[in-house]
Image (cartoon, rainbow, N blue to C red; front, side):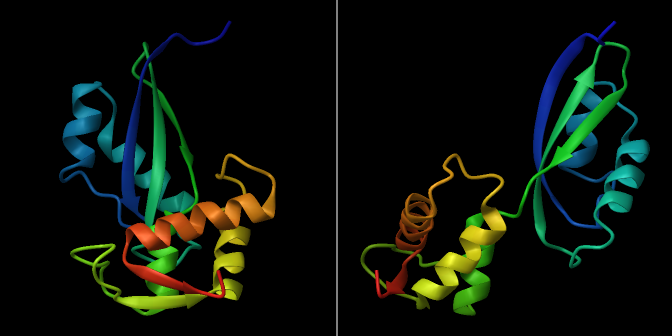
Length: 143
């Protein structure tokens, strides 16, 4: 018989760096989950990735205080900042341009993010990434 789901917890955790400090500890503690068990499992699952990349994680908490988690691909904003060589996005997007990326770089980001995007059409996925870039103040050359 399937376990009864008590709830879902969505967090962005740096790869290989999960620890019981906020935001992980309080979020899991409220659900009554074993914090250290999650930290060990998450760090083991992300040890082959580049350290410190923000990984969106969905934790399913069950009624018997066990859990399972699913990791997704890093956010498009992370890839866009990396491609443009920026430490952070624009303060006033739309009014200032802080960097630029090429259409080739956008297509590479789509390849990384393909599993988590809600379209299978590459052109539509590119438009989604271009929209994210514009909202960050990053210009897309050739779009």
